[in-house]
Image (cartoon, rainbow, N blue to C red; front, side):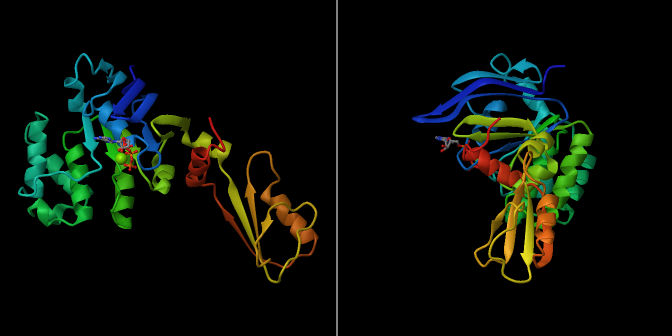
Length: 304
Ligand SMILES: Nc1ncnc2c1ncn2[C@@H]1O[C@H](COP(=O)(O)OP(=O)(O)OP(=O)(O)O)[C@@H](O)[C@H]1O
Ligand SMILES: [Mg+2]
């Protein structure tokens, strides 16, 4: 089966800015792919070019196996996009704007689908409200509902949870998992690295229009992730004993040790501390974070 999305050597030039500088990637059916990178990296441009909304300078895009240069329209009916910017007509109600969206995609009126999405996104009480009367977070929920109303097979979520409260963010995560379970492919950009860590099957890191890394999330965390051991002492410790790696805090009351493949284990550090009779008062282990890995990738400290 052709990949859901295939991008080859994609370049987008805006004046003197090269927003995409030769990006190639494939997204397979049913995966959740997180596209990560700093502001201005090219994430939104890549999504725009992949759905045919941004005119590419060069390169190839195939959506569902169809070359967008040959047929830019048909494959788009199977795509949903939650844009980063809020853009809807303020004079319709929530329900009306969802109905209109169904119409755009050439679908028969399907109130059941609309009710289902309203409920999933906690918008039911606002169904008859005018969209301009929604709060910022509610507007974002409506954007998400609009992107899904025609049951797309591929969904792009460009910063779907920016400005969304914690509770809805959690609800949305479970909804994204449900979409995946139904076989929908999801491409997500986010600045909440916790969100990518929670949801993604694969992660891509982009900076200045170039993909720096493309890897399965679990493998990436295993390869580059660093768990952190934090030990709190009951009294000042002037120096660390033999066999205990890590750094002492300035006040000499804490030890921080980053554990990664090929180094000492946290257990070995701890036993060295106990063997030396140091006054260990508290021990905490912090799991490896995608956020730390991404920062190191962007600094060029680690790579593919
Ligand atoms: N319509 C445009 N005209 C000119 N330059 C643009 C346009 N859209 C984007 N750019 C430039 O292209 C580059 C990539 O922008 P893009 O919006 O894709 O970044 P992004 O990764 O989505 O960033 P953010 O995390 O802030 O959303 C930036 O340098 C941006 O200024
Ligand atoms: Mg963007």
